[in-house]
Length: 284
Image (cartoon, rainbow, N blue to C red; front, side):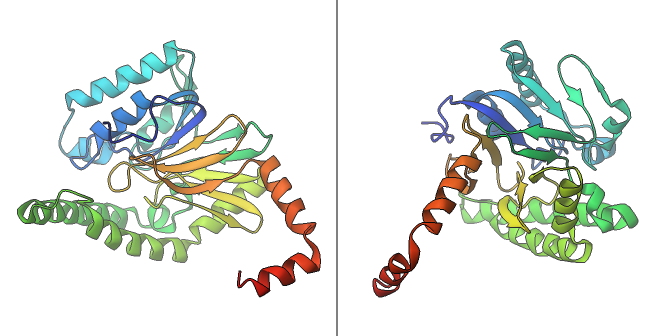
């Protein structure tokens, strides 16, 4: 059975992916291709760092699976899917090609309207990383160090015969570093405020390789994750609800449709004091 056993060729409204890093030797390109083959989205958003220009500039590395990924994107387009691409810091060279090429529309940011009417600003997010913007040399150094850590972790796990979650340790280390970056630059808050300024109800981004969905001051922050460590993707269904999924189909986080949220809110409001007392007595 496929690793994507929870997906099984599902037709979905929208698929959001980011940080595939094609050209980086640690890119999980085969699992990513499997994702593309398992889903049939009506719209596909590539939310930056699809191609790792930093790595390719240093040493050209283009594997046959990359061509198969591009072919699958062409297949999706022929099937009627709309494909949108917002570049990131590792493929920022594409920011000079803001256009509609027929196959894919490239812009710095998009506004996606979900099936339930909610508007989401879609962008990579590196614009709000203060280290990336003000000290890119440090970002390059950190990227190199992280690549070394990935290689070391992979080699150690191979020697130990460990096949599951081979990047668990380095993922933890990077999340710690990225957490510092996020706190210093107020990454999430800045993105949410930008979404608010754009009259959107949420933000969908990538960049920090930390998949999650959280509420920040009444707006939804959705990070799609990556295809180096986490192998995660954000999926919108026909009712406007979202699931953040791992490669095995398990759910990391979810964002219910607006109608479901309203119904849940009304249900909680209508329970009254008696129901609350009952919950307390039951130990809930």
